[in-house]
Length: 161
Ligand code: FES
Image (cartoon, rainbow, N blue to C red; front, side, top):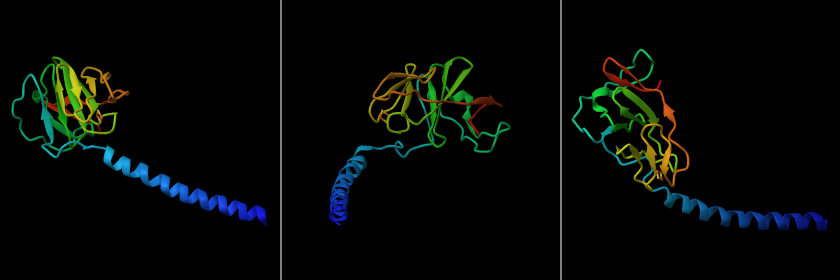
C-alpha cells in the first residue's frame, strides 16, 4: 500500500499547488481587463468629418430581420459611426459604400472608441483598424475586426439580424 499512500501524497500536494497557482492568475485577470465594454455613454458615436446630431434610431426590425441602427446620413464619408448597443461600427470609405464591422476590439474586447482618418481606433490599448476593411493597422490587436452585414433601407442603416 505504499504505492497508494504515495499517490495520495502526490495528489494532495498537487491540489495545494493547484489552488495556490489558480489564485494569482484570476486576480491578475481581474485587474487586467481595464474598462472592457467601453464607457457608459450614448448608444452611438459619430466621428469626423461630420458630427451632426441625429434623430433617434428606431429599434424596430427591418425587412431584412436586422435592427435599424440609425440614419445613413449620420455616417460621414471617410468616417463612421459606432453603434455601441448593437456593437457595430459602420463606415463609409467612399460615398455610398457602407461597411459594417464588429465594434468589439479583437485585442481584449473593448468597444472601439472612434473612427477617424480612415481608422477605427480602440482607446483601451491603442489598436487601430482600417476603416475600409477592418484589418489591423497597428496593435496590440492581431486580428481584424470581423465584417458584419449592414444595408441601407429607407435611408437608414440596417444591422445584422
Ligand atoms: Fe486592447 Fe482594444 S481592447 S486595444
